[in-house]
Image (cartoon, rainbow over the protein chains, first blue to last red):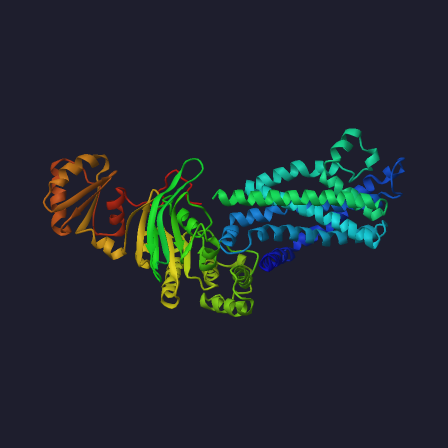
Length: 256
Length: 322
């Protein structure tokens, strides 16, 4: 068990170093939320005037949504690095050592979750600058937990897809196909009460929507039980995806 | 006990491609043992099974005394594995690569720093140790990989096509490194290659693998000595089969092996046989494009046991090389 944690730590450090050495990644990480917040914030500024909206400013409403959308994509793209590793025989080289198999996946998922937590602080700071205010301590923890869980879930899913598909093209197609629809089939941009009935029904089964609900209720401090329930759902989703990734890893090892 | 013991390994890939059809060989402690064969012959599959990356369908194998199926963890602790395509992390430095590898290979924390330094020294990468591997040349990458395979002082080192894709100069340098490895380190090496000269130059003993089977095993010199006399290779276009009958009767000819347009004739003495062979072909009105006389090489060994000429690019429809 100690060895497992040591393996995760060492592999996590490897991913962290690679991330820190990518100035373009850091730049995009900083700039993208600004674009989302200002673009959508301006575009939909007046929807808060609709009856049934929870907040008085749209930026306040949008911040948890953008935060979760960033988190979801951060997780979803994390399998790309694994495909690169597969193509360069890095995974095989690791598998020929006693390293814990689960650690290879866990380190990647935890790296994605950690970077998203850092990103989340940046988004919250930006939102503060744009006038959305900073959530309470409990709210901050709630929103970070929701972001970390949704990232971990999508990162594990992405890892599983990477191990099965082993092609960047497939990965890009899958993420493009599911990414934005999942974001739009949720309360990311629009108050849940104002979403058409059928979309509301679909969104109930959408992990992105669970994360957005948890994050928004945490930030606004409106409904603590909704934070707990949605976080619990996210945890189940994440565990299922970790199981999927583990099974995919087994398929990969058997196939060679 | 043998460092590697392989008994009747079989492996069929999905889609019915028979990669291994009963491979057996033994490697003694401290030996450099070669698996020689064209792409798709089953060399890489064998190494992947021995390094626990792949599972055999049948047969048995032990590496450093550990069974590859029932004691995979034991095998992994005892081996270094250097694959044919890099395997290093390009976005980390040489030192970071070596350190992580040592950690995964359970080198004790207190000795990692010293060991990594020693290995960087040994492969002469001290100056580049803290540069990103992405900036390394092909030869430097390969030296780093070999260092990564040796960082935990393994009993057995697998080198799967170590010189493929290297330029001739780097290849020669790597040969010298492997000579040094043999001289300075107590490690058994299993090397796969599709270069005849490489197997000849580096291996203490070797197996020739073809279509998933070991066709012959021995020391390079014994294999070559086994082929008596000289070899005359004649290119006679499409008259190959007819030439076989004609040349069989020529005085001094030991064996005629037609293989496509090239006919290989093993003769007792090259100097006296060549004029006779030429005359016999001339009488039969067979046009000779080229005729070369040579001493027995591993190619002749290969031809004798497989019935076809050695062609490194030759591949069965396998995908057995991956």
